[in-house]
Image 1 (cartoon, rainbow, N blue to C red):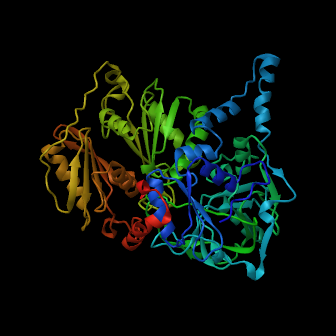
Image 2: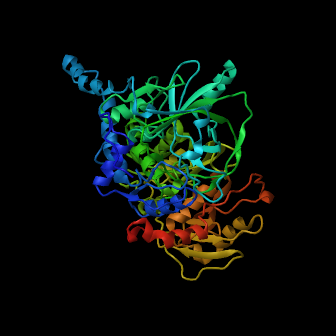
Image 3: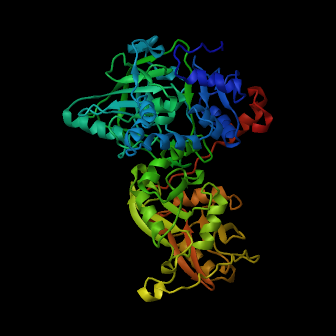
Length: 624
């Protein structure tokens, strides 16, 4: 492939970012032919899980366009993409903007001018000519198979566009929205549009239906990496604040946009491709999926609207951007961390006792949130957790752990040690209900299920004792009973247990081959009654595919496979209380009527093929 042309605009774009990564030794080129079906996924998956470089595949079979993947596949590359030295700097930028002074006389007001000047960079800047519109496909020229769109995983329903910036406008208010919704290719000029019920695109489509009109849609591929990130960010519903505004603020300049060729929508002028077309709300929806999703499980087939592509515009020499999702750790973990940092100041404005929060990769965003607080009164942990459940997309959180301010929320082991030491099962755990991510396969209903709050903060006198205690009894000074964890050497056997181990910090991990209803509950009761449970606070029952020697794999499986109201409960042991987590597969005989999806696995044949061809790719052996 010839060297990439220099950008015509100052605003960074995909190709300038590729050059920057290459100059820093963070990107490698693969020139041998590679297959868009599975092969690129297997290569990219190995690299991202080992912290390897981004890749520019210059020769994708069946396409004239190169493909870039893994561009934000490390914390450092994500920070670089967003124009900061470290992701923590995002919180500083936002805190600087929202900390406007309204007192102090004229001097106090004048001190705001610099911040307001920063905010002026929020609206996009319209340009008349754009690199992305220099080449235009119309009519029969529109053929999505000419793009190197990936089929990522073996059971996927087809090729999926995985890094699309989907642009729509509210038919009533004119408010713009950009979101990242996967798009399954269903024909040469038709894709699915994965608008879930909570998404803004769904709301726009419903308004178009009521008005009896089609909904114009533009899908950008590429552009400033800051804009690609912004399309994934859970923005609050503030008028005038959209993804172009976020990218503009991060860059310190107004984002360049231009009108679509056939749709009255603003599109990023420096994108690589733009797909223009419409979704007709009067059409029947089409089956989409399965898809190997960011949960690490397949999302099963379901009905979604169709996007008709009428025009494709592009640069003269475009690069197709892609990502893959699946079992953690994946590239999306760093985008999630960027959102954490970006929205920390806003969360602290609403809940000022919050010191920090983190969504570990094992929780695939919504399944686990760890928050540290500066605690000053009893019940504060529950106040904060319930407050978080009410903040935007945090409503989808399944398990929230609250710890004291001295605990590092991104130290996975330290957090769970704190949970074992400070949270008494039953007394310091609370289940509730609410909205759940529609991709969650284990909840009691689609988009609705149980939630769990764990108070792992140091306890005040009022928080010690049972709920039946009188006010006077609770107010007396008392000492907390210290839990002493220990691992037993003689572990019991039980039907279906394939592997098990205990840890010195009070956890018991079990891989269960479940063959009958009630098996996990019976196992939990038997193990809790055994002397080996005396130094244990948490019993984790996972499925037969789980590696009990891998803490991340254990928690990833457990958090995906539980509805806390149904699957997490306290049991008495000979020395205290134990919390059982049933992360086994749920059966129809147990009242679970939905289909249970498989975990994502690459085919053995493709793994062998990539092993055999690794030396041809020119990739470093250490990332193999």
